[in-house]
Amino acid sequence: MTFIELMQRLEQMLGYHQWPVDPDARELRDVFDNSPVNGELAIRIMRELYKGNHCQKLDDAVTLEQCDQTLIPIRLKLVRSQTTDIDAYQFMEQMCHAVHKAWMKNHNIDKNKSNNEVETAEIVSLKPTKQYR
Image 1: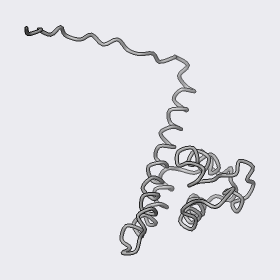
Image 2 (image 1 turned 120 degrees about the horizontal axis):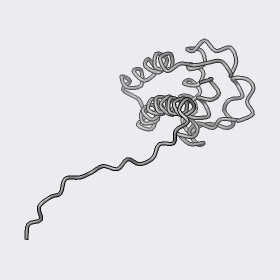
Image 3 (image 1 turned 120 degrees about the vertical axis):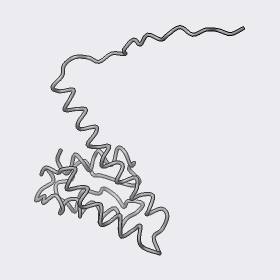
Image 4 (image 1 turned 90 degrees about the vertical axis):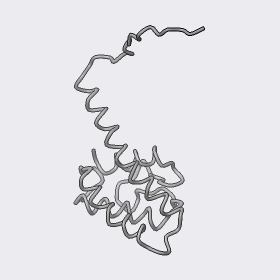
């Protein structure tokens, strides 16, 4: 997955108000189309994900492991701070969850590309039960 793909998936999961990605962005400074609700924190996370994955352009690949390594110190600082706002804390929790969900979605897409079979519902037989009257 590329950096910009990750940003777009995070926007889908978190919502435009929290992660407003400009689909026409060409540089890091243009990634956010607008000001996110948790502005400073969101911008910091976005920049740290870029830097932590050693990106030089928006189309560079990112990994879940590097994203985790980047988010852990940011999250720990928020959790340990006596002055962390509850909204910032909840945003950080949603962000961590969304990053992992983005990779799960990516894994499922890759799995479907390699497997052309259509998965259907499976019929499960149930044991008959006694009815008491």
